[in-house]
Image 1: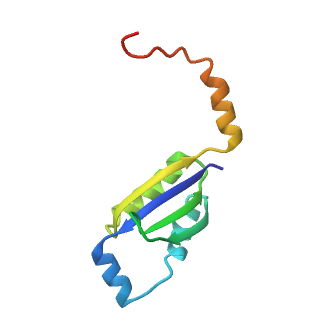
Image 2: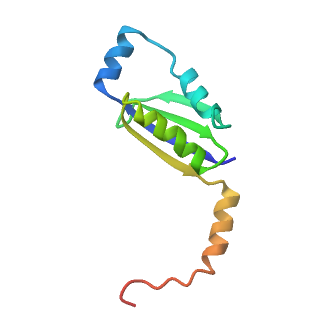
Length: 108
């Protein structure tokens, strides 16, 4: 199954609610992705541009998009970005296929 790396940031209001009622959000994240047949591989908080990161596995892009849409539609996040991760083998396959693409740069 494909892997997805998500970066997220909470809104100030969400942080205020969490300060008043601390909770382990891993369980919620796990339930979201399991509802589409996926798996949560990791959940981390961080200092920096984003408040946290998750590593998910989902059956396909549509399933992961459904999870992302449901989460962002909830209003607790200020940002949510997801990157599809490719295995080394998938990247090698893409490199081989790239030889078949007849690319012409603009103006050529």
